Length: 220
Image 1 (cartoon, rainbow, N blue to C red):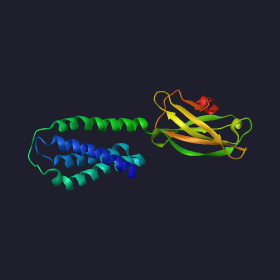
Image 2 (cartoon, helix red, strand yellow):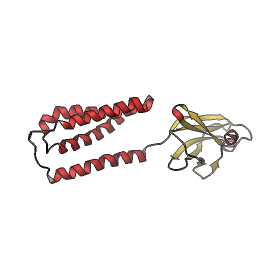
Image 3 (tube, rainbow, N blue to C red):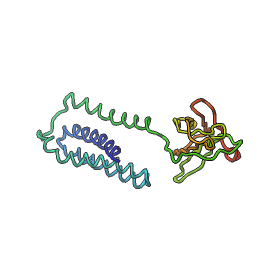
Image 4 (cartoon, rainbow, N blue to C red):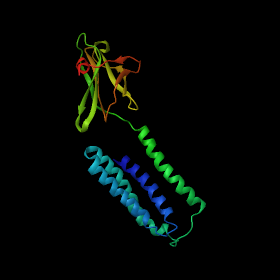
């Protein structure tokens, strides 16, 4: 929660500084906390109306960061506006007005690129069934999301499975890592949640071994 609010504060500071500098020509410095507060309202409305649910709470915490910046900015505004009259932009102001939006959108792009695009729903071990190989199956979960369940077969008795990475740019590719487990009578499974999948789906190990879909999945 605090990490998400911190991210919101980071973006809120960028918005506040950009608006504050842009207000120098008009002298309406109060627009900086006002615009930041309006963005807080938009983000919260988006979290409640469009996103909703548990993810909506996360977006709401992000909006809380803008609220913090708006409140703190309002308290410190008298100190920041000792020169209360309008004035022309300096060279530093112009550079700031160029670089702040670049920083804002670059940070958003980096966040999207680096964000984990999956989550582990469950993992553990099940009893090995003689003659049964490794397989995966895809099912739909609430909010139209998908989950991929990977079961290790008899050939991986005594082994567990961990998710290594999920690539959703293009066809969905799931890479899992086979690690040492416990009893030789058990093999691992893992359930991975995804917002969506793109066919054809490939599930493979870090050694390059392809795991095939279950028979029921192939029939569907």
